[in-house]
Amino acid sequence: MLEVNMSERLDDLFFLNEDKKLIEQLKIMKQMKETKENLAKVSGIKNELILEKLVALNVRPETLASLSLVPLVEVAWADGAVDEREAKAVLASAEKMGFLKGRADYEILLNWMNHRPSDELLDAWIHYIQGLCEELSDEERSELKKDLIENARNIANASGGFLGLGNKVSESEAAILEKLEKAFD
Image 1 (cartoon, rainbow, N blue to C red):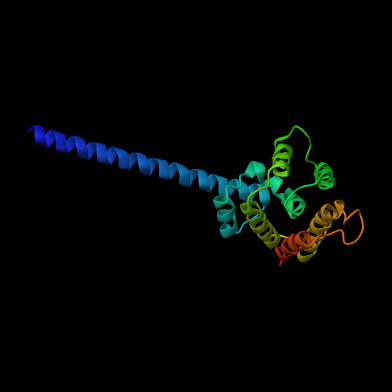
Image 2: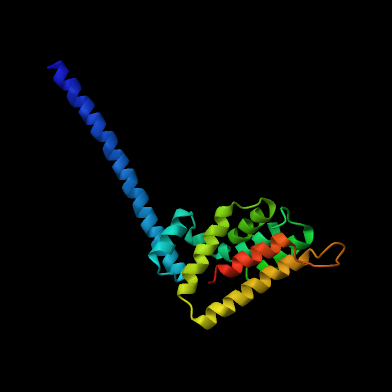
């Protein structure tokens, strides 16, 4: 009798643990679905694969607006460090775009300016742009690309060449600019 009770208890514990795991997985799946739906609402992106990729890259609806700053940050970090002129240019561009001091998105930007973001951030931006471009007309996509590349090029030009002379855009900055442009194709 004792042996049967012990066996039943072990079975109960096993299934209790399995139930907890399943419940946790269901919660995670529900959160992912809600995040995907909210990203779709905020971004206008309808492509399920793009939305799933953004969720997998941990892009949250509340930080989606910050993705528009990624090209500026990537160009600023292209040479391995952000100099003072680049930092000022990035912050000035961000303020023109509506990112104001004291708000969460501005704080995210400051963090990116002080600590180089991982390569996953640029990947998230590329997926975001690709999804967004699917929803834009050719004219809208062209205008977005023109504005974005112009802003990014301004950051590349901010640090200037050696003593302000020569080519203002370094090879590494040019490579990032090219990568940004290709995201629109």
